[in-house]
Each structure stands twice: as structure tokens, then as C-alpha cells.
Image (cartoon, rainbow, N blue to C red; front, top):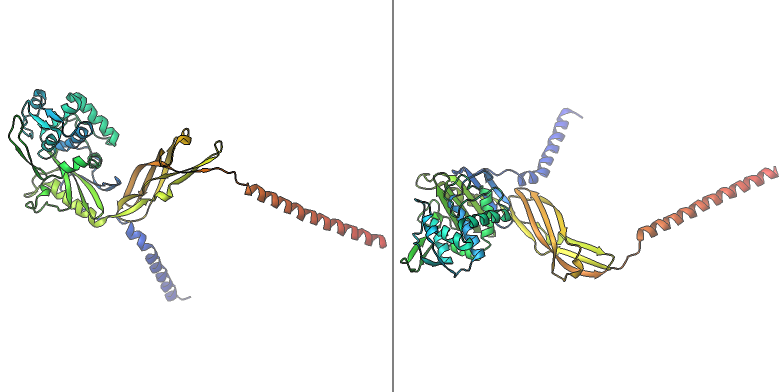
Length: 424
């Protein structure tokens, strides 16, 4: 074969290899990093918790008033919305001087819901103190409750020392933890309702005239043309000199809901703020480059448990499929089962019988999801014939028959030889 033919064959093989492998190559390529101004940013899929983008998103930062996300959710979980709360002298006088306030007066009476408007919309530190005392009776007990809740949610690199976020060296978090906290908080309908409110008037109280509350979230308003974003649903701002600009927001476009956490950003990027510019950029980046995939098919997680003693077969399943935003297929998973076998005989159909922890990894995907296992079917156990034993038994018989026939032929041949020998 001459050199020209060899070159043609090699080029043909290389081109075919490129065509064959290129879909996988393009599916897993790294996305170009968007231009950002803040030092710490992270994007999370609000449904699965999958981290879609991180720029120092796991580093320590100061949260400032994004702290109030937790203060609000603890109030919603422990108090009634229409409960009247009286602002104590301690709550008002312990508000840090020079911090943002809602101008609540000592002895003023407000419903919890109106306090939460003061807390989340205009970011009043005085409102935070009043809410904290209403939940726990005193600030120290509330702070303990905050840190317990953080651990429960999974915010393992966060520690809070107050209810409002005014700077303290021991009051810190990470963008990941704050996105995870927002993911938890937006499951509460009232929290979303308040955080998504742009403007509202709070009725007059026993101490104050009516208050006009306007959200500090500049992304709500079309007049802020560089940062206004139509797909933004809500968000919480924060600022201290040490933390600089902070923001945790969530938005939805089509079937995609994402959370953006932006921290340690300048307040002076031209006429705009880094936290809002970056949040808008990251929303657009995510909605343009990520799509929703079914990553867990409930039919793939069905398990049969055989109870020989009680002659029952139990079928366990997960109730729902799971979806996540990914920049491309493929992905894979493994899992751990945690089932209470001791009392499964007492369960009814659709009762919860344990949990499954599913680990999913792949292209722009790294999640751990815990799903409940349900009892979906109970059948009587009938011991099936041991077909393997029967097959072995039949094979053994066949081998014995073959061996017998071989021995029979050998014996017959020997007799024939003996007869021939005798004739001679």
C-alpha cells in the first residue's frame, strides 16, 4: 500500500471518530464564565438544589441583612400571622445605631405580618429585634434557635449572632448556605408573598401613622433599566461596610426556577450596584444555558422485600420523579436505603416505611436528595420451585445416562474382542 493511500485511510478514520465522539464532547464542554463584579456568586436550581454556577460560592462572607430571611421564616413557623406583637423597650433600644430601621416605637402594636413587611421590604433592624423577642422571649434564645435551624437546613458553614445581620466578626455565612436557606424559605407561601411585594401601605398603629413600605430590591423597578429583570420573583438585600453589597434572589422563566446569591460587591459600578448587575447576568446565563432533565425516574426505584416468616412480599417505591437543571446530559446516580424492617407488617398501602438517599452526579450536576419510600403493594409469598436445583438434577441424570452408555459400549467392545481372541 503506497503512502498516499495510507494517509487517506488515516484521515478517514480520524474524521469518523470526530463525528462519532463529538456529541459527547459538546454535551460536556465547560460553559464560558460570565463577567461579574462581586467577589462571591453562586447559582442554585431551586427545585433540586443542584449548584449550576459558583465563583467563590463556598467562601466565607458576611451576610448583612440577608440574615433576615431566617428571622422571617422562624417567625412564620412559630407564630400566627394575625398575632399582635408589642415592641419592647429592649428590642427597640438594642437596635444598632445608624442601621436601617422601620421607626418602630416602644409599646407599638403591630401584627406579625405587618412586622414582616417592615423586616423584609424596608429591612428594619428594629423589626428584626421585635420579631426575635416575639418568637423566643429573648435574643439569646432566638440566636440559639437560628443556629439550630441553620444546621437542620444544611447551612453548615454559617453562624449567626443576631437577628438582623449588623456586622459581627462571628456572624458569617457562604453564598451556598444563603442560597440553600432561600431554597428552604420559598417553600413557605406567606414568605414568598411578602418578599415578592414591591410596595404596600401598613395601617396606622397605636403609636404611628400609616407606613408606606417600598422594597429595597431595585431589580423590581423598570426605572432601574440596567438591573430591572422581568423574570425576577423576589429577593433580600443587605449592606454593611464590612459585607458590602449582598443579595439573594430567585426568579423563574419557563419551567426553570433558580436562586442567585451575590455577595461582597461594590455599590458603585457606574450608577448601579454589583449585586444587582451580577444577579441579572447570572439569571440570563442560567436560563440561556441550562435545561430541565428528569434525573430520577420513580419507576427505577422500586424494591421488593420478601418476608418468608409472614409469607408476604412488600413493594416499596418513591412517590415522585425528580428533575434538575443541567447544561447537558448525561448523569448517573447511586443510593442508600434506610428502611424500618421491624414494623413493616403494621403498615398500610401508601404509608411511609423509610427513606432513600440518592446521590446524583454528572454534567453540571452534583446533588444529594432524600426521598421517602412508600409501601405500594403487599402480596402473598408463595415459594417458587427451585428451578436451578431442578436443572442441576436433570443435568446430573443426563450425565449419568451418558456415562452409563459409554461404559456399556466399552464393556460390549471388550466382550467382542474376547470372543475374537477365543476363536483364534
